[in-house]
Image 1 (tube, rainbow, N blue to C red):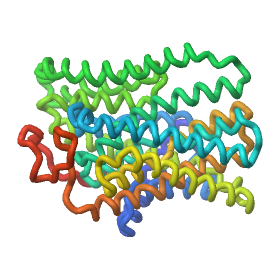
Image 2 (image 1 turned 180 degrees about the vertical axis):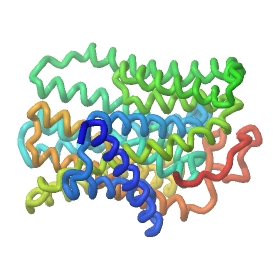
Image 3 (image 1 turned 60 degrees about the vertical axis):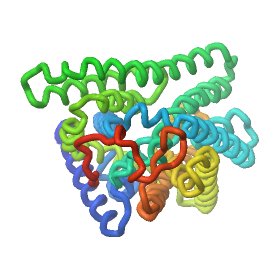
Length: 416
């Protein structure tokens, strides 16, 4: 079997496994993402061995999560995020600080090596925006105050995680930690988010009519997708995740009068491509390295620590939303997903982690991604009336929302 044929077979297996896993998850009242991650574990090298993560599949995975965050941005206006800016900032900062400190102390207790401990703790920091966004979108609750806080905090989370990773990498390599250089990188990342998010939305309001200039009905979609891919690439040049650029592109496109049309047109792309990200996330787990009692103990402690520290950071930062809203935010910030996997891979390639520690961190990242979504879904479904932030920062129920916030063309969201 030649290389192209083998890749096509794996694409077929991943897509079918995602559909089966998603359907099984729905039957047991769990979010689709849980079934897709578990399906990835089953078809991956650790169990059936039908799929092996490779560069072509990683590219499809990256495109899938980029499109997912673009679609989430389409349903998020910059004015919505500004209303929860204070809460999002507090959640982002505390959601990084508390897991990092606790993760460092735990890692140091199992191996007294501060640079290595800091590297391990970095895997506890960043929330997987892709996983939480999928759950929020599937439930149709992207307009809730908690959802806006989570998405805003995820952007701050990513910036701080990038900065921390730069610090621990420099310390582990034994090089000199240049605070000036790190501050420059941090300023560039913050500047990118603010300029693109603030200036981009204002420019789009003025030039939105250009999207209708070509005669093809799909031309608006083609133009905004080009913007999405371009900003995703540009974000990586500022040290940020590609999904941050895609999310900002979606927010810019949400300011156009074609936003409802764009949301409908992107759904087939999401159905095709987003499963690759979640299935490959599950396929990366190495079950063989977790066969010993010591590994399982380390995994249990790491997973509980990761869940509780993010919950604490999110809850404390979002208390302005009330106890129930803060709990929703804390749970929404729990998944580590691909971020923890990437940091674990960096640690392994740098010789910082043993295969055991690598497997524990990857498995912890996946377990948080499996445990958090059904809890979040249950909390949001049983939360009663949809809550929103008023202009004065208080909480308003659905029937209190200002008329200026209504957006034509919005319909209840269904899973995909």
